[in-house]
Length: 303
Image 1 (cartoon, rainbow, N blue to C red):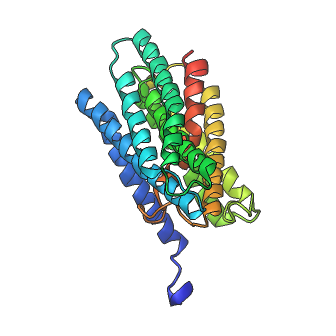
Image 2: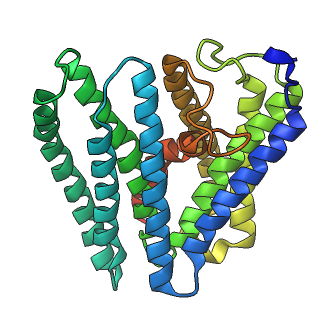
């Protein structure tokens, strides 16, 4: 029994809630990826990413406040959403592969310039803040939130517009990364005994870690076997190796977010999704894995 006599939900119920919440969100995302109208698809996808970014930044800054920090919420959320929209503008309009590469470089330049400009802007904000104590921590937490959420979400956009099959690459990336989460939870719940890093996440086990990698590898192999025509350069060896790498990355991304939640003394980053928690709880593995996937596309599979 939980506190107050309330029964703790069963693992099966929690799993069903997690599955339902994830299916709803990623179903909406798929509509944005594969809508018949290309313009509608691009705008819908950008809108979803911008909304997720705003909510994830709000959750991050709320956790920072619980840790005793004083991030600049409005500046951070505004800058993060602005970065997402700016990168969309730089990436979404392209007619050929050469232009796509130029736009990717433009997106990186926009992010670099924005981060440089944010430093003096945050300094000015701190000058007029009610309390000057902890100014370095306030500015640093705001800047880190933008990097952790907005810049890493922008890598999802860079995968989406990588080439003409970018929406398929993004679908592959999301499914394989989240299958690691599913495998780790299922296997860990059933046979997990040996704790990974109890001080960070008491529920994570080595058995769950192995299960997560196995699920990622199997889902990557399934994409290779049944939809290989959509993935330029994908071979059986690449499918197995990339599935394993994304499986490990998903667990690490989850652990890193768990570390931040433990610092803030919260169980979940928010309460948007039953059984999962907040937006950051849903995105943690994707945020960590996004740069890995993009670099593999750029310098490995489609180089």
